[in-house]
Image 1: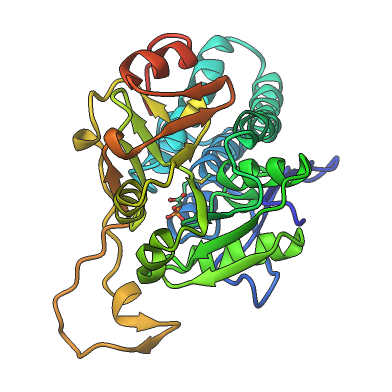
Image 2: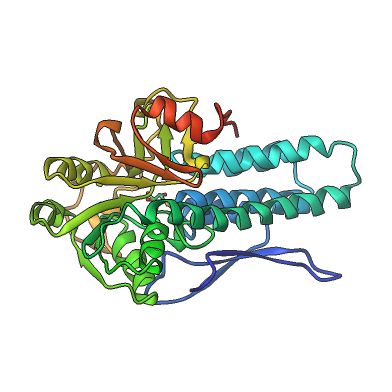
Length: 348
Ligand code: MRU
C-alpha cells in the first residue's frame, strides 16, 4: 500500500517537505504531489489532492509545520489552513494541537520551535495509524462472518494516515479470519468509492463489488448485506453523524431493512461542543462536479445545481459508533463523552 502522506526530512541545506499521493488521479495514475510551503498544503487540501477527515487533519498539522519552518506569521498559517474545508473537524482538532504546542514553546530558540513542530506533526500521523488499528480491533467482532459489508465513500488508508477507519474495521475482520466481501458504493459525484475504496480493497485482495449509489436499497433489502460500516467527518454530542453525501440514505435504508449501521471514527472526529448535527457546517462544492464527468458535460448548460458534499445521519439510525476507545451505543450523549474522556474544546 502506498503512503497517503509523508514528511521528508530536509538535508543540511534544504528544508523538510511533504509528499502525498494525488488522490484525484487514482486509480489510473499513481502521481505524487510535493508541498514545500503551507500555502501549497492549503491548496492541496482544498483541491482534494488529499481528502478524508483524519488525513486532512494530518495534512493540516504538517502544513502548520511547513509554515513555522518558512518563518511565516503563525496566525496566518493556522487561519489559512483552517479555511480550506469546513466539515471535517479533524482539521481544526489538528491545528488546535499544533497551536497548543506552539504556545508552550514561546521564548524557545527558533530552531527548537521548528524541530518540535515538525515532530508533533509526525506524531499526529503516527498516532493516527495506531488509532485506526485500535478502531479495527474494536469493530471487527461486529462484522458478521460469511456476509457482505456495505460501505460508502472512502474511509480507508487513503482517508487516514494508514489502515483506515471503516476499512480498518473490514481489514481487521478479514485479519481475524472472517470470510467477508465488500460492496462499495461509487459515491457520486467525486467517486471516492469507485476510484479509491475499490482500488484500496483490490490491492489488499479483499473481494469487492462496485455498485452505484442508487443500488444500495436493492441490496440492503436482499438479505445479503450483514452490516454497513462508514466513516465520519464530524460527530455531534448527540451522536448525529456528518459523512459523505449519500450516507443518510444508506442509513435509513439499513434501518428499514434491519441491517446494523456502524460508524467508525477516531475521538478526534467527535465534536462535543455541538449539541446536534444541525450545527455542523456542510461544505458546498462546485456545480461542475455534478454537471460533468471527468470534464465531459452530462447536463444541459445553465441547469441549476446543488452539491452539498456531506449529509447528516441522525443518531437514531446509528447502531453503534466504533472509536479507538471502544464501541459507543445510544444514548450517545453519555457514551461519546465517556469514550472521549470528557468534553473537548475544538478551535482553529
Ligand atoms: O470529501 P471527502 O472525500 O474528504 O469526504 C470523506 C468522507 O466523507 C469520509 O467518509 C470521512 O472523511 C471519513 S474518512 C476516514
